[in-house]
Image (cartoon, rainbow, N blue to C red):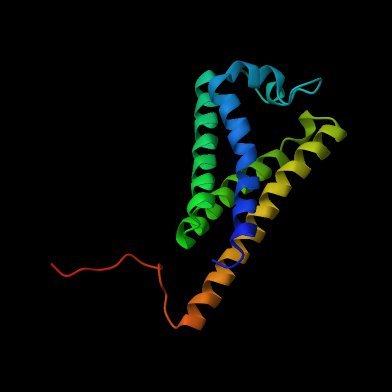
Length: 156
């Protein structure tokens, strides 16, 4: 994969939020609900009653996404990188879209802070995915093969 350092850094940057938020939510769901983000602002408790099951599932899902992104950064196998970025893009786009519908629950400054952070994840995931997919296609075209694009088929 061309520019592996760029791809690896981007994957790890994308993984940072789901890793931190996911671990915090999974292991401390009540703390996440009562005090996210840390400090004077509270966002999670403005969107409905506390539900430990929902929050631990959310934390586990985010942590799973973070693990996928970190493994993709570690191995840098083209198909895994693309799959991890598609997963991150789906998650971040859905999260951003939801928060666009809940702006009435927050102050203007909280909306700006929240939405900028969420759109950053969408844009970074999409940009890195476009880069990885484009460089993968260009590399395959130049070599005349599609190495690593499909599992090998063996005859019995």
